[in-house]
Length: 101
Image (cartoon, rainbow, N blue to C red):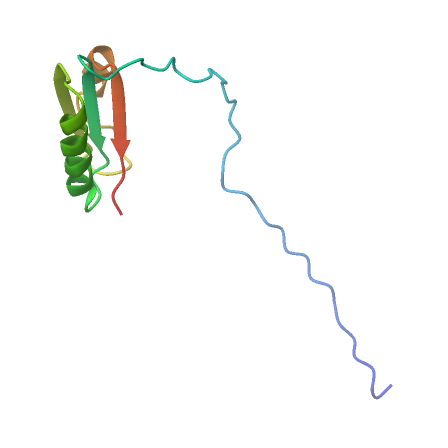
């Protein structure tokens, strides 16, 4: 049997590490008609550069709008929840959630 090549098929099972979840479609929040007089919240994900980027976003927004207050939260790690987030959610009219790299 020279010249014949025999191979065996090998089966590899791939597994998806992402758990299946039930997703709730709650739609989009109603849009604000103006940002003037509103309470803004800025949430920093704690990654490098996020504070610099969000500082510039805040500066530019303050040049255009007159917020009644600006709240800030910073995550200790990008995978953790920002301290005080529940209070911010109760008080803020809108949130800017920014990412660093």
